[in-house]
Length: 282
Image 1 (tube, rainbow, N blue to C red):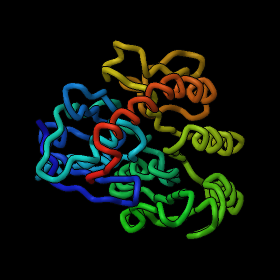
Image 2: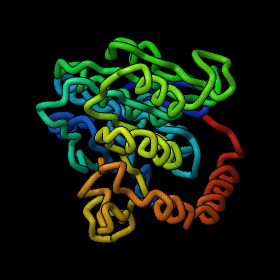
Image 3: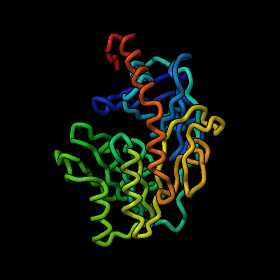
Image 4: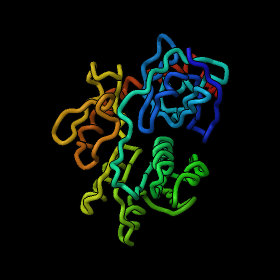
């Protein structure tokens, strides 16, 4: 059992949790993830490690309440425990020694994953710009944390209610056009966003990493549920990723596969709402 030691709502649908997991905290690195299971009846769900504290022995996760499992997780409070919390899984983000300037791009709750990437790169002495995209001002998260680990932070909102109006790709193109020479772009967020970030950087031959979080079950590559096509070859996100070359990912196939269990997830969410009376206790 893994005890929850801190819980904070970042906005109406996104929650931060700090969990006691000393063995994971001891080995965790930026880009890796855990798989949790709330209880014996729960499904296994992957979440990227948002932060870790080796001295305290804790791992921080940030999740959006979108399905049955994340709703059950959000119903837990400080002092409660999670049945399974497995990790660290996946390959840590690797940055070549010759990389000096990086642009990290996050979309929505993907900024919870982009933030630790920016933090690790900043701590390594690299120049880090970050573009954080949100639908509107009311769902902006981690602004102060991101600002503290970047040289320049650009907030973009779809409706213009905060920061600059537009998509993250609009800002990326603008920064490239005015002469910013990035050695690397890292994009984390909705699949469609990562697809268009890669399309924006490809004509400029800027190396681009994307973090993929497809359907996962066992986290060892045995089930094949997280397979993605990269460079024409089949890869498994849980053991080969989650970071991949954005210019080689078959995003269209990935988007199609991610909709396979949409109907079942809706049924599970309705079942949980029925059991809890539709209430959130987080």
